[in-house]
Length: 389
Image (tube, rainbow, N blue to C red; front, top):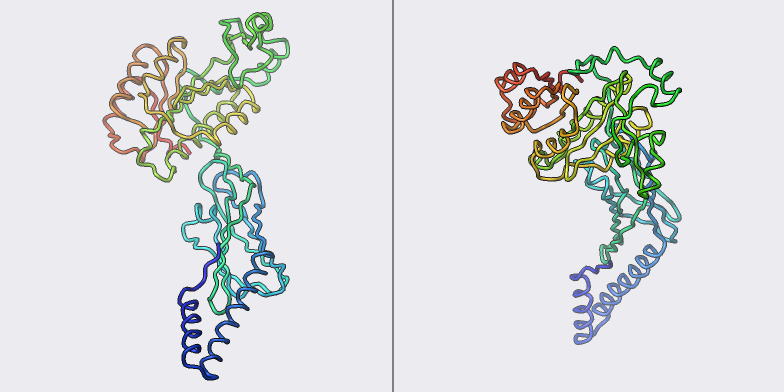
């Protein structure tokens, strides 16, 4: 987009009218000087606009949230004129850097300039490098040329996973799980370790070794055999990722903390050879069976683009799922919503015979010590996420 300074253009017109009516060398000299500047600056802006290119690259295509990374803005001036004044602003940098207001640079004839920015992206997601806007003016400020350059490259930011302190998951003694024994049994075939409990549709994360090909061929879609393990009882881990609890979390920091802990907890269990099931409550309920590192990596990749969504009640989502969970099973809940309705439901689960462990953020508003004591008295293991990180 090209803009001309209106005051200069009007001044040139007035000087011409004045010279036309008054005559004389001086008025015409002033007009010709103004006109010459107008012509020269027009040529200057034309060549700059045709020979200026901007590219933006990232040192790393995949990073962990909070990890250092460099973004480089590469500006190329292939014209026969230098650029004395140029403003540059990148949309991604503006989004993730609070104090970023762009850069002002100058470039010599047929030269280039690289602008390096050290960044940290604290929230998971797929971040496009966006667009870079350039504003170039001539030395007289007569013309201003503004252009935008789009960049297709994307930075994938994974949630951070960190080691956890020793945790007591009620109903699951993680220290008793023996990886070597389990792997030896698995090498003999899944039925030697577990008995068939159910036939159900395939879910993301299920092992293809458990596919029931006879039922699959009959119905035209994948069905798997669900086993009941004698070595590693399944731990059901719920992540409450509904939208409502995070309504005040404008920058997404609390949600990120919850997701990071959820993945860290799943990894902790996987390292203890636990057979866990990750259940994400949002717009819909998503289920991931986690029994190896590949399953964990798949869940981590899924969470890159998974954000809080949905406005239903947490107990309503859980009730539909709990119908298929045996009593005495280990049930783990990771939540930011400690409303009375939720607490009452968690207590009911414990009363019904489920082994409930609850993880919550200390930063949750309106969480009283009495509420925590009440759940502890009802047999629920309660942990502050901040205390076990």
